[in-house]
Image 1 (cartoon, one colour):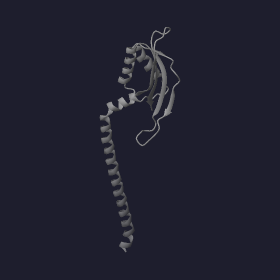
Image 2 (image 1 turned 135 degrees about the vertical axis):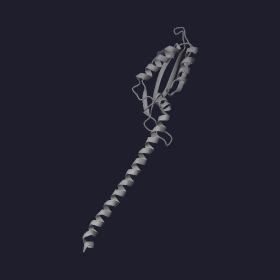
Image 3 (image 1 turned 45 degrees about the vertical axis):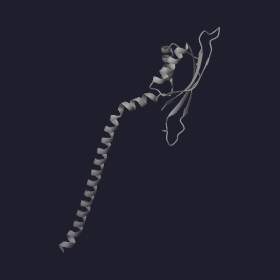
Image 4 (image 1 turned 90 degrees about the vertical axis):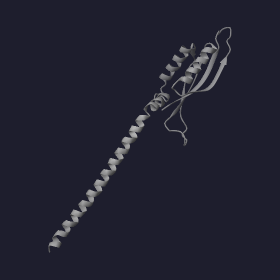
Length: 161
């Protein structure tokens, strides 16, 4: 008779023990996952200087005042006069298997005038810049009687998030 009274209670205790074991295993899995994530976070922290360089190279601000300011500053530092800044075009980068989504291409055309040496310094400033700037097209016109300095036309491409 005692067996009939204790057997359901025994099954209930075994069921709860099974649930406890499952919860322990789940907690252990979660602890291992947290440990792994902490390790990954520490490894990512080691790359912080490189990530900051990427953030500088890819602007978060597609409204472009910072780009215009950069162009004006580099032109004046190089001894050039920035002229005729054309409207810009922002297009999404075509996503492929090797590229990341969410990156935009920014196209901009402008003219600068000044000496050839100043123009070389200006291009050198682009090259040394942390920003990713590609020169798509460059042309120049020789100085005339009205314009004592040559005029250089540039079409550039840069990127932003």
